[in-house]
Length: 331
Ligand code: UDP
Ligand code: MG
Image (cartoon, rainbow, N blue to C red):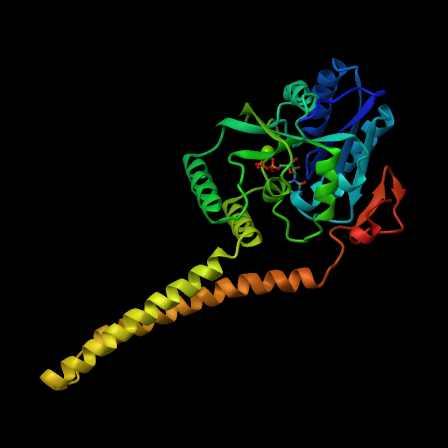
């Protein structure tokens, strides 16, 4: 690993995807500014991505931009979701490294100096690992634990556990992420997929400072499906496997029936067992059709190859040319 050597002042971007964050964004800016004021050896840049907020988040961003020229904002044309908002920010930021943070102060900016410390040591992806999860229900903790365990088991790349999107990424990682233009993004998995020198540091995740979370269990469930289907075809393989086992059992059962009929004759019993087997097989078939459909749906979505997002304006200026893929990768 190569330690970083200083050649002039480097630029660090702070990337913040925001959806309806007017209540907390000024506080976020305040607290983060205080932290970076103590790190004069770098230049800083804020990249706020307005992900189609319905409140006055955009106005807050404009005000901050007016006060502070280090602030830039990317205004997306509608709500695209956090995963897409992040790649939009990554496309637009110009730093030598970037720190991705939530607007709600759940990711304490006080951790930035430590991240930079490890970056200077030569690590390329310094992620913050949650030591505790304040303000989360028992069920959320349990389900998240179960999900990570499952994902780690079935995916082909080692998945990081309990790390969120709060991390510092160097330019090489950022460029790697920009190469991945899949529209159904599971960014946590992509971070693991790209590899490079990784370092995890521990922190206590606070409860949201103000405003309310945009996640609910349905969304989290969908994200979990997203995570699994975008990183492994294990469910497809499982369905083939279960199919084989069931076929084998049916053959054995068939033989049993035939032999029994030969020996004892047939008095048409077995309606209950028949109906339950039919229903069981039907259920299994529908379930695995669903699994296949999930992958088919992904192929459908990706094959449209639409741009990942549309930008209405950048720092108040209308954006006329939209990026579509890696062909117009460098602007
Ligand atoms: N976010 C976004 N687009 C969305 C939903 C959320 O950009 O559609 C942002 C949100 O503004 C926040 C971050 O993603 O900065 C994390 O969201 P939230 O705090 O609601 O999630 P949680 O911390 O509960 O996982
Ligand atoms: Mg949050």
